[in-house]
Image 1 (cartoon, rainbow, N blue to C red):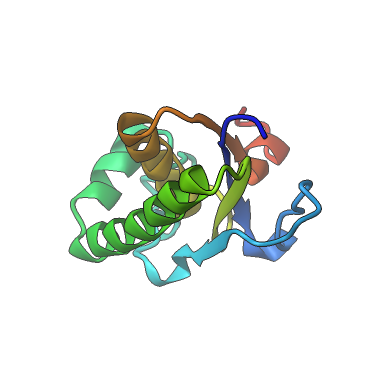
Image 2: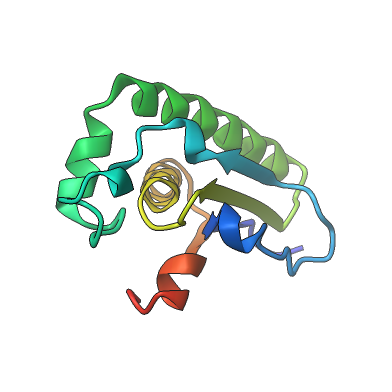
Length: 135
């Protein structure tokens, strides 16, 4: 087997769950809809989870901090086990209502943490941002 690869996706629940192209199933799907929604504030509506204003808004919320702490810890535990077992693939998806703010921010936060803590291949795909023309 090759090096472990982590595939992270953000998506909109309105558009449905993302497909898992690995054909093995598994992985994690985290529901970000319980987090504060920047999209309800007109100042953030046209922005995304990649924009500094949205990042600052979400980063300062204790609920977001706890959600990310727990989800990142769970995924990183999974990565350690998969590395020990010589697996080559793990998938993680973050969903929110529109796939524009919360799920994007969370996907990017996981990506940054894993890249800091592990020497593995990590890719991020923002499905709804791509569909909306932001990327």
